[in-house]
Image (cartoon, rainbow over all chains, first blue to last red; front, side):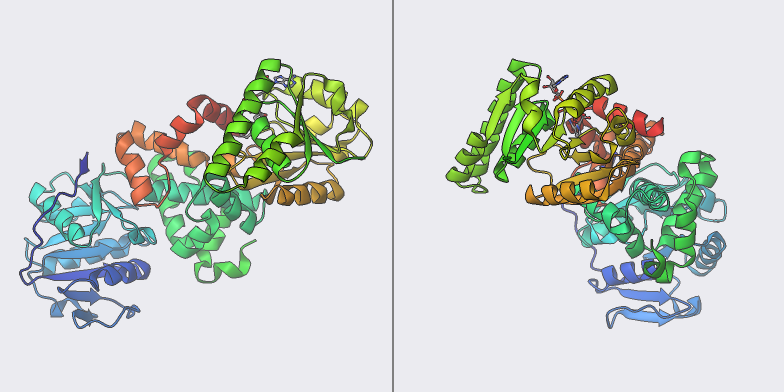
Length: 263
Length: 248
Ligand SMILES: NC(=O)c1ccc[n+]([C@@H]2O[C@H](COP(=O)([O-])OP(=O)(O)OC[C@H]3O[C@@H](n4cnc5c(N)ncnc54)[C@H](O)[C@@H]3O)[C@@H](O)[C@H]2O)c1
């Protein structure tokens, strides 16, 4: 199931990319691309804070973006409408060879495929805040995704020294699903006053070696992002185990100032 | 009165706890119903102390001193001089109940009964004694001589004095105490449940396979071990019994 990272030739021809979507993810993927020589078009409403780079081109409209690009990274998890809007605009603007790499954490690639004229070039991506600092990225294919497209995406990440793992097209994919369920459970425990915020974080780091405590991790990710995954899983399955805690909902509503009212 | 710590049960957890207490300078009386369990427990302690010296975490003197602080017995009555008893016998309410009642009768008034239970209610265990304010959860993690966390669990009637005494003791043991309420799974076993549960679901739904899920969790999430590797290490059976207790 895994795609191994054998030595592959890195492509050196002129290439450009497009990045758009949720601010946090644009920020993280932008930072990743600051290691690259390629032209990177950052399509935004509000200019993200990124390191100053000559190869970054900020634009509020797609018209400035070349029609032929290697790939568009569409990184919206928080709003389905915005995501579909972005994808349709990208599809209308970009040549049909340009890949669309779309975050497929809150909905499946299959669901996105329904909106596309050329669904052979869409690849699902496990884009979720905080995960890009590590070494592996999850990918998934839609019903019509071509092998070549998948290979190109593998090569793009390989150039950034990231491994990829191909998983099945399911809401939450693997790591975002496990992580958000942990954070959600931690907020249930907080809400029931099982322990303090600090107590829970300390316990999980020292008692079971987690790299970060679930509450501090949730804060770093943004509780709105965590909620979007839980809502998507709950909607997808209708199962009680995915029900977001009321505290998570509240923390998500005030995601930008959650530290002020974390219990 | 000398400060003696009684440890009940010389299995996986009890032996680790005895070692930690001895290293902190306490006299330890390690009790088990089985002589063979005591021999095995003491053997494990000696090996772990040796390893500590090898890895230069301990000096030879510290290790020898700790070894000398530990006595073993199959005679329950000898526990009567303990200031604190840490119970780490098998995870069965009836057995712990019997132990608690006998301890309650023979221990000095101020002595504390602490239990390492993973899944039984501290309040319910306290209620079998007449010292409900001096019964507390002291939940170590396996391997107890290495893992830094101890969850301190306050039963409904556990007093503040008891909590603060056990908190200080935990710190003397070189561990980090975290206060938790008496709810199923306390903190770690409860919050960690989705780590295993979701991994099993993801596998069952065919989203990925065992080796890949472990790889993703380590390389994408930055976890030291994958959920399946951990389940192998802890034992599926222990995991099931903990999950059940949280569920029920
Ligand atoms: N193993 C773990 O990972 C872990 C972690 C945290 C807490 N705990 C808890 O610690 C306790 C002990 O678990 P363990 O894994 O060390 O078990 P274990 O089976 O390794 O050891 C239990 C010991 O208790 C002894 N024993 C049985 N009945 C007794 C009695 N009436 N009086 C005295 N000793 C008796 C047995 O002879 C055995 O040596 C349980 O309450 C368990 O829930 C276990």
